[in-house]
Length: 308
Ligand code: ATP
Image: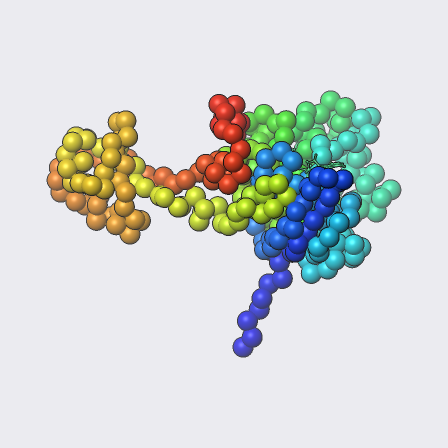
C-alpha cells in the first residue's frame, strides 16, 4: 500500500519580494497543510500582506516560488478554488447585503444566486439581508466580505485581519464562523492577525514571520505546551509545598508544580493523601504572546500586552 501524502495547500520556497531597498519577504520557506485554521503572525512590516498578495496573484515575487493547491499562483484554475478577504471590503452602499451577493453572482459570475440564503445564514446576516450596507457595522461588513469570499465554494480561504476593528461580540462571532468553515465545511482557512489571544483560540497551527523570514512554525498546542506546569489552588499551601519539595513554588495564592503531564495524577493523589484540599488544578503553558515577543524581539508594552 502506498502512503497518501497530502499536498500542502500552500507551498512557498525561497520567496523574496523587494521594494527598492526594502526586503518585504526575504527567502521565505513555508508549507501550509490542508485542513484547519492556519495563522500567519508577525509584527508590522513582517511581510504578511505581501505574502498574501503574492498568493492571490495580485503582485509578483522578485524571486522564489509559491504554489497553491499544487499549482503555480498564476494558474487561473487554481485561483478559482480559493476565496479571500484582504482588507475591510467595500461594497456599493446603496445595495442590501442580499443585493451585493446577487450582484457578485449575476454580474461577476461568482457562485450561484440560489446559494445566497445559505451564505447569508452561514455568516449570520439573514436578519440583516435586506438592509442597505451603508448602515452596516465593521463586523457586519467583514462578515459580508467572508460570505462574498465563500460564494465560489473555495477549498481555501485567505483572510487578512478578519477581526480588525471589531468589538468583542463581533470577534466571537467571527471566531465561530472561521471554526465552522474549517470543521463543518472542510475549508482550509489561512488568516493573518495581530490579535494573539484570538489566534491562539482559533488557529490549529501558526507561522511567525519577522523581517520577511519564518522564525517559528508549529501546532499551537505544541508551541504552547513547552514549559507547561501544573497550577494548583490548594490549602494549606505549606503542606502542599512540603509534598512538592523542589518541584513546587508559591505563586500568590496558588502553587506551581514543575511536573510532566504523566506525573500529574500521582501528584494529585499524594497531595490528597497528605490531607491537602485541592480547589483547582490546571495546566498552564507558554502563551502565543510570549513566544511571539521572544521570536520577533518586539518590544512588549502595556498596550501590546493587552492588545488581544
Ligand atoms: P502589517 O502588520 O503592518 O500589515 P505586514 O506584515 O503585512 O505588516 P507588509 O505590508 O507585507 O507587512 O510589508 C512588508 C514591508 O514591505 C514593509 O516594510 C512595508 O513598508 C513594505 N512594503 C509593502 N508594500 C509596499 C509597497 N507597495 N511599496 C513599498 N514598500 C512596501
